[in-house]
Length: 341
Ligand code: F0G
Picture 1 (spheres, rainbow, N blue to C red):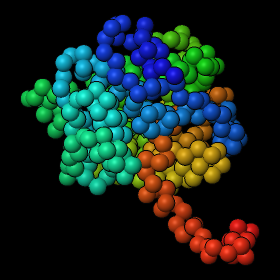
Picture 2 (picture 1 turned 45 degrees about the vertical axis):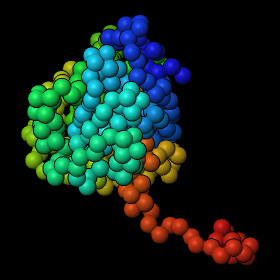
Picture 3 (picture 1 turned 180 degrees about the vertical axis):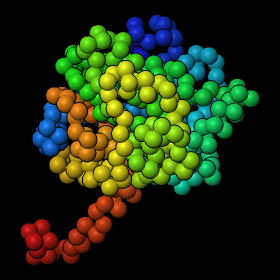
Picture 4 (picture 1 turned 120 degrees about the vertical axis):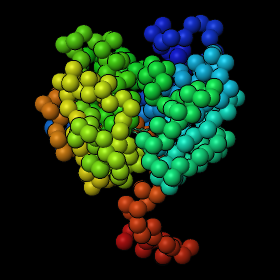
Protein backbone atom coordinates (compact mmCIF):
# COMPACT_ATOMS: atom_id res chain seq x y z
CA UNK A 1 0.00 0.00 0.00
CA UNK A 2 1.27 3.46 -0.89
CA UNK A 3 2.10 5.85 1.93
CA UNK A 4 -0.31 8.66 2.60
CA UNK A 5 1.55 11.45 0.81
CA UNK A 6 1.26 9.37 -2.33
CA UNK A 7 -2.38 8.46 -1.61
CA UNK A 8 -3.53 12.02 -0.95
CA UNK A 9 -0.90 14.09 -2.72
CA UNK A 10 -3.40 16.41 -4.45
CA UNK A 11 -4.75 17.53 -1.05
CA UNK A 12 -1.37 17.78 0.69
CA UNK A 13 1.30 20.49 0.33
CA UNK A 14 3.73 18.27 -1.58
CA UNK A 15 4.45 18.57 -5.27
CA UNK A 16 5.49 15.75 -7.57
CA UNK A 17 9.27 15.48 -7.26
CA UNK A 18 9.41 16.67 -3.63
CA UNK A 19 11.28 14.29 -1.31
CA UNK A 20 8.95 11.83 0.39
CA UNK A 21 9.96 10.05 3.58
CA UNK A 22 7.45 7.23 4.01
CA UNK A 23 7.18 3.92 5.82
CA UNK A 24 3.86 3.01 4.19
CA UNK A 25 1.75 4.71 6.88
CA UNK A 26 -2.01 5.29 6.79
CA UNK A 27 -4.82 3.25 5.17
CA UNK A 28 -5.58 1.66 8.55
CA UNK A 29 -8.60 -0.62 8.97
CA UNK A 30 -11.99 0.42 10.30
CA UNK A 31 -13.22 -2.60 12.23
CA UNK A 32 -16.73 -3.20 13.58
CA UNK A 33 -16.95 -3.73 17.34
CA UNK A 34 -20.10 -5.80 17.99
CA UNK A 35 -19.68 -6.31 21.74
CA UNK A 36 -18.90 -2.65 22.31
CA UNK A 37 -21.75 -1.55 20.04
CA UNK A 38 -24.18 -3.56 22.11
CA UNK A 39 -22.98 -2.00 25.36
CA UNK A 40 -22.98 1.54 23.96
CA UNK A 41 -26.30 1.22 22.13
CA UNK A 42 -24.87 2.53 18.86
CA UNK A 43 -22.90 1.04 15.98
CA UNK A 44 -19.23 1.51 16.92
CA UNK A 45 -16.39 1.13 14.43
CA UNK A 46 -12.77 1.16 15.57
CA UNK A 47 -10.09 2.97 13.53
CA UNK A 48 -6.99 0.92 14.26
CA UNK A 49 -4.24 3.53 14.23
CA UNK A 50 -1.95 1.16 16.11
CA UNK A 51 -1.42 -0.57 12.76
CA UNK A 52 0.67 2.30 11.45
CA UNK A 53 4.38 1.45 10.95
CA UNK A 54 5.57 2.54 14.40
CA UNK A 55 2.33 1.52 16.11
CA UNK A 56 0.59 4.86 16.48
CA UNK A 57 -1.24 7.60 14.55
CA UNK A 58 1.81 9.84 14.86
CA UNK A 59 3.22 8.36 11.64
CA UNK A 60 0.59 10.22 9.60
CA UNK A 61 1.88 13.57 10.73
CA UNK A 62 5.50 12.47 10.84
CA UNK A 63 5.73 11.43 7.16
CA UNK A 64 4.70 15.01 6.31
CA UNK A 65 6.78 16.80 8.96
CA UNK A 66 9.95 14.86 8.11
CA UNK A 67 9.44 15.07 4.33
CA UNK A 68 9.06 18.85 4.72
CA UNK A 69 12.14 19.02 6.95
CA UNK A 70 14.18 17.24 4.26
CA UNK A 71 12.77 19.56 1.58
CA UNK A 72 13.80 22.57 3.70
CA UNK A 73 17.33 21.18 4.10
CA UNK A 74 17.10 20.46 7.84
CA UNK A 75 19.70 18.12 9.22
CA UNK A 76 18.12 17.45 12.57
CA UNK A 77 14.68 17.17 14.14
CA UNK A 78 13.53 17.38 17.74
CA UNK A 79 10.35 16.85 19.74
CA UNK A 80 9.01 16.70 23.27
CA UNK A 81 6.98 13.56 23.74
CA UNK A 82 5.07 11.25 26.03
CA UNK A 83 6.53 8.47 23.86
CA UNK A 84 4.73 7.90 20.57
CA UNK A 85 5.84 11.08 18.84
CA UNK A 86 9.37 10.21 19.94
CA UNK A 87 9.17 6.70 18.48
CA UNK A 88 7.72 7.98 15.22
CA UNK A 89 10.17 10.89 14.88
CA UNK A 90 13.07 8.52 15.56
CA UNK A 91 11.92 6.07 12.89
CA UNK A 92 11.32 8.66 10.16
CA UNK A 93 14.59 10.42 11.02
CA UNK A 94 16.45 7.13 10.69
CA UNK A 95 14.78 6.57 7.33
CA UNK A 96 15.69 10.07 6.13
CA UNK A 97 19.23 10.08 7.51
CA UNK A 98 18.49 13.00 9.86
CA UNK A 99 19.69 13.38 13.40
CA UNK A 100 16.93 13.20 15.99
CA UNK A 101 16.63 14.17 19.64
CA UNK A 102 13.56 13.38 21.73
CA UNK A 103 12.79 14.92 25.10
CA UNK A 104 10.63 12.71 27.30
CA UNK A 105 9.37 13.00 30.90
CA UNK A 106 11.74 10.88 32.97
CA UNK A 107 10.28 7.52 33.99
CA UNK A 108 6.90 8.31 32.45
CA UNK A 109 7.02 6.77 29.00
CA UNK A 110 6.00 3.22 28.15
CA UNK A 111 8.88 0.80 27.59
CA UNK A 112 7.98 -0.12 24.00
CA UNK A 113 8.19 3.53 22.96
CA UNK A 114 11.53 4.00 24.69
CA UNK A 115 12.88 0.86 22.99
CA UNK A 116 11.74 2.17 19.61
CA UNK A 117 13.35 5.60 20.02
CA UNK A 118 16.62 4.05 21.14
CA UNK A 119 16.68 1.36 18.44
CA UNK A 120 16.13 3.99 15.74
CA UNK A 121 19.18 5.82 17.05
CA UNK A 122 17.56 8.93 18.46
CA UNK A 123 19.21 10.83 21.25
CA UNK A 124 16.80 10.22 24.13
CA UNK A 125 16.78 12.88 26.81
CA UNK A 126 14.88 12.12 30.03
CA UNK A 127 13.77 15.45 31.47
CA UNK A 128 13.03 15.63 35.18
CA UNK A 129 9.72 17.31 34.43
CA UNK A 130 6.43 16.58 32.72
CA UNK A 131 5.52 16.85 29.02
CA UNK A 132 4.26 20.42 29.27
CA UNK A 133 7.59 21.66 30.62
CA UNK A 134 9.45 19.61 27.99
CA UNK A 135 7.44 21.14 25.14
CA UNK A 136 7.92 24.69 26.44
CA UNK A 137 11.69 24.12 26.66
CA UNK A 138 11.95 22.52 23.24
CA UNK A 139 10.12 25.47 21.68
CA UNK A 140 12.75 27.77 23.17
CA UNK A 141 15.51 25.45 21.94
CA UNK A 142 14.37 25.59 18.30
CA UNK A 143 14.07 29.37 18.48
CA UNK A 144 17.84 29.42 19.06
CA UNK A 145 19.02 26.54 16.85
CA UNK A 146 18.36 25.37 13.28
CA UNK A 147 16.51 22.19 14.27
CA UNK A 148 13.06 21.32 12.92
CA UNK A 149 10.40 20.92 15.62
CA UNK A 150 8.14 17.96 14.80
CA UNK A 151 5.57 18.30 17.58
CA UNK A 152 1.98 18.87 16.49
CA UNK A 153 2.54 22.64 16.69
CA UNK A 154 4.24 21.97 13.32
CA UNK A 155 1.53 22.51 10.68
CA UNK A 156 2.83 19.63 8.55
CA UNK A 157 1.85 17.27 11.37
CA UNK A 158 -1.72 18.59 11.11
CA UNK A 159 -1.67 18.19 7.32
CA UNK A 160 -0.74 14.52 7.66
CA UNK A 161 -3.12 13.69 10.48
CA UNK A 162 -6.12 15.05 8.56
CA UNK A 163 -5.80 12.03 6.25
CA UNK A 164 -7.33 9.77 8.90
CA UNK A 165 -10.60 11.73 8.62
CA UNK A 166 -10.43 11.47 4.82
CA UNK A 167 -9.95 7.70 5.02
CA UNK A 168 -13.06 7.41 7.19
CA UNK A 169 -15.08 9.50 4.73
CA UNK A 170 -13.67 7.48 1.79
CA UNK A 171 -15.08 4.39 3.51
CA UNK A 172 -18.33 5.61 5.11
CA UNK A 173 -19.23 8.72 3.14
CA UNK A 174 -21.21 10.93 5.51
CA UNK A 175 -22.81 7.97 7.29
CA UNK A 176 -21.13 8.91 10.54
CA UNK A 177 -22.67 10.78 13.47
CA UNK A 178 -19.78 11.09 15.91
CA UNK A 179 -16.05 10.55 16.34
CA UNK A 180 -14.75 9.49 19.77
CA UNK A 181 -11.10 10.34 20.35
CA UNK A 182 -8.63 10.61 23.24
CA UNK A 183 -7.22 14.09 23.79
CA UNK A 184 -3.77 14.95 25.12
CA UNK A 185 -1.89 17.78 23.44
CA UNK A 186 -5.03 18.18 21.32
CA UNK A 187 -3.38 17.95 17.89
CA UNK A 188 -5.28 14.92 16.71
CA UNK A 189 -8.82 16.13 17.45
CA UNK A 190 -7.85 19.39 15.70
CA UNK A 191 -6.58 17.53 12.65
CA UNK A 192 -9.63 15.25 12.36
CA UNK A 193 -11.98 18.21 12.54
CA UNK A 194 -10.03 20.06 9.84
CA UNK A 195 -10.12 16.90 7.73
CA UNK A 196 -13.88 16.44 8.07
CA UNK A 197 -14.55 20.12 7.41
CA UNK A 198 -12.63 19.91 4.16
CA UNK A 199 -14.55 16.99 2.68
CA UNK A 200 -18.04 17.07 4.25
CA UNK A 201 -20.81 19.67 3.98
CA UNK A 202 -21.64 21.34 7.30
CA UNK A 203 -24.78 19.27 7.95
CA UNK A 204 -22.93 15.99 7.37
CA UNK A 205 -20.01 16.51 9.72
CA UNK A 206 -19.69 14.20 12.75
CA UNK A 207 -19.77 15.49 16.30
CA UNK A 208 -16.35 15.42 17.93
CA UNK A 209 -16.43 13.62 21.28
CA UNK A 210 -13.07 14.18 23.00
CA UNK A 211 -12.03 12.32 26.14
CA UNK A 212 -9.32 13.19 28.62
CA UNK A 213 -8.04 11.23 31.61
CA UNK A 214 -9.60 12.61 34.80
CA UNK A 215 -6.20 13.44 36.34
CA UNK A 216 -5.12 15.25 33.17
CA UNK A 217 -8.27 16.98 31.97
CA UNK A 218 -7.48 20.69 31.48
CA UNK A 219 -9.98 21.08 28.64
CA UNK A 220 -12.75 19.63 30.78
CA UNK A 221 -11.93 21.92 33.72
CA UNK A 222 -11.19 24.92 31.53
CA UNK A 223 -7.83 25.47 33.24
CA UNK A 224 -4.32 24.00 32.96
CA UNK A 225 -3.41 21.16 35.30
CA UNK A 226 0.00 21.74 36.90
CA UNK A 227 0.64 18.12 37.85
CA UNK A 228 -1.22 15.85 35.45
CA UNK A 229 -1.46 12.19 36.49
CA UNK A 230 -2.94 9.15 34.74
CA UNK A 231 -2.15 5.54 33.96
CA UNK A 232 -2.56 6.54 30.30
CA UNK A 233 0.95 8.02 30.10
CA UNK A 234 0.52 9.08 26.45
CA UNK A 235 -2.08 11.69 27.47
CA UNK A 236 -0.51 12.79 30.76
CA UNK A 237 -0.64 16.43 29.63
CA UNK A 238 -1.82 19.44 31.61
CA UNK A 239 -1.61 22.31 29.15
CA UNK A 240 -2.39 21.26 25.57
CA UNK A 241 -0.68 23.24 22.81
CA UNK A 242 -3.79 23.05 20.57
CA UNK A 243 -6.19 24.17 23.31
CA UNK A 244 -8.24 26.71 21.29
CA UNK A 245 -8.27 24.57 18.15
CA UNK A 246 -9.57 21.58 20.08
CA UNK A 247 -12.29 23.58 21.81
CA UNK A 248 -13.29 25.01 18.46
CA UNK A 249 -13.56 21.48 17.02
CA UNK A 250 -15.77 20.41 19.91
CA UNK A 251 -17.98 23.51 19.86
CA UNK A 252 -18.41 23.90 16.11
CA UNK A 253 -19.19 20.22 15.67
CA UNK A 254 -21.79 20.22 18.47
CA UNK A 255 -19.67 17.68 20.33
CA UNK A 256 -18.37 17.45 23.88
CA UNK A 257 -15.24 17.01 25.91
CA UNK A 258 -15.44 14.74 28.96
CA UNK A 259 -13.20 13.05 31.48
CA UNK A 260 -12.80 9.34 32.24
CA UNK A 261 -11.17 7.88 35.33
CA UNK A 262 -8.15 5.57 35.23
CA UNK A 263 -10.43 2.74 36.40
CA UNK A 264 -12.77 3.38 33.47
CA UNK A 265 -9.81 3.53 31.07
CA UNK A 266 -8.40 0.23 32.32
CA UNK A 267 -11.82 -1.46 32.23
CA UNK A 268 -12.26 -0.38 28.59
CA UNK A 269 -8.69 -1.53 27.82
CA UNK A 270 -9.46 -5.01 29.17
CA UNK A 271 -12.87 -5.11 27.49
CA UNK A 272 -11.40 -4.38 24.06
CA UNK A 273 -8.66 -6.95 24.43
CA UNK A 274 -10.84 -9.63 26.00
CA UNK A 275 -14.08 -9.17 24.04
CA UNK A 276 -13.17 -7.55 20.74
CA UNK A 277 -9.71 -9.12 20.28
CA UNK A 278 -8.16 -5.68 19.94
CA UNK A 279 -5.16 -4.64 22.01
CA UNK A 280 -4.66 -0.89 22.19
CA UNK A 281 -2.66 1.18 24.62
CA UNK A 282 -4.36 2.72 27.68
CA UNK A 283 -4.59 6.25 26.22
CA UNK A 284 -6.44 4.84 23.22
CA UNK A 285 -8.89 3.05 25.48
CA UNK A 286 -9.92 6.45 26.87
CA UNK A 287 -12.15 6.99 23.86
CA UNK A 288 -13.87 3.65 24.44
CA UNK A 289 -14.13 4.33 28.17
CA UNK A 290 -15.76 7.63 27.27
CA UNK A 291 -18.39 5.98 25.09
CA UNK A 292 -19.09 3.41 27.78
CA UNK A 293 -19.35 6.03 30.53
CA UNK A 294 -21.01 8.92 28.72
CA UNK A 295 -22.84 7.12 25.89
CA UNK A 296 -22.79 8.05 22.24
CA UNK A 297 -24.73 11.31 22.73
CA UNK A 298 -27.60 10.08 20.59
CA UNK A 299 -25.34 9.05 17.69
CA UNK A 300 -26.38 6.05 15.58
CA UNK A 301 -22.93 5.34 14.20
CA UNK A 302 -19.65 6.29 15.90
CA UNK A 303 -16.03 5.86 14.89
CA UNK A 304 -13.74 5.43 17.84
CA UNK A 305 -10.07 6.19 17.20
CA UNK A 306 -7.67 3.68 18.78
CA UNK A 307 -4.56 5.80 18.58
CA UNK A 308 -1.79 3.37 19.57
CA UNK A 309 -1.01 -0.35 19.78
CA UNK A 310 -1.18 -2.26 23.06
CA UNK A 311 2.34 -3.65 22.59
CA UNK A 312 3.68 -0.15 23.24
CA UNK A 313 3.07 -0.57 26.96
CA UNK A 314 3.58 -4.18 28.07
CA UNK A 315 4.01 -3.20 31.74
CA UNK A 316 0.53 -1.76 32.07
CA UNK A 317 -0.90 -4.81 30.31
CA UNK A 318 0.91 -7.28 32.53
CA UNK A 319 -0.15 -5.39 35.65
CA UNK A 320 -3.76 -6.11 34.63
CA UNK A 321 -3.30 -9.86 34.52
CA UNK A 322 -0.73 -10.75 37.17
CA UNK A 323 -0.05 -14.38 37.96
CA UNK A 324 -2.14 -15.56 35.03
CA UNK A 325 0.65 -17.70 33.53
CA UNK A 326 0.34 -21.41 34.42
CA UNK A 327 3.65 -23.26 34.86
CA UNK A 328 3.77 -26.85 33.60
CA UNK A 329 6.14 -29.85 33.71
CA UNK A 330 6.78 -31.45 30.28
CA UNK A 331 4.43 -34.45 30.88
CA UNK A 332 1.15 -35.12 29.08
CA UNK A 333 -0.74 -35.70 32.33
CA UNK A 334 0.49 -32.37 33.69
CA UNK A 335 -0.33 -30.62 30.45
CA UNK A 336 -3.84 -32.09 30.51
CA UNK A 337 -4.35 -30.77 34.00
CA UNK A 338 -3.05 -27.35 33.04
CA UNK A 339 -5.08 -27.05 29.84
CA UNK A 340 -8.35 -28.57 31.00
CA UNK A 341 -8.55 -27.40 34.59
N1 F0G B 1 -3.24 8.56 22.06
C1 F0G B 1 -1.95 8.26 22.05
C2 F0G B 1 -1.56 6.82 22.00
C3 F0G B 1 -0.98 9.28 22.06
O1 F0G B 1 0.31 8.97 22.04
C4 F0G B 1 -1.41 10.62 22.12
C5 F0G B 1 -0.43 11.72 22.18
C6 F0G B 1 -2.77 10.88 22.13
C7 F0G B 1 -3.67 9.83 22.11
C8 F0G B 1 -3.32 12.26 22.18
O2 F0G B 1 -3.15 12.92 20.97
O3 F0G B 1 -1.82 14.83 21.75
O4 F0G B 1 -2.90 14.85 19.52
O5 F0G B 1 -4.26 15.02 21.59
N2 F0G B 1 0.81 11.57 22.28
C9 F0G B 1 1.81 12.62 22.20
C10 F0G B 1 3.21 12.06 22.18
C11 F0G B 1 1.62 13.74 23.13
O6 F0G B 1 4.16 12.73 22.56
O7 F0G B 1 3.38 10.92 21.73
P1 F0G B 1 -3.04 14.50 20.95
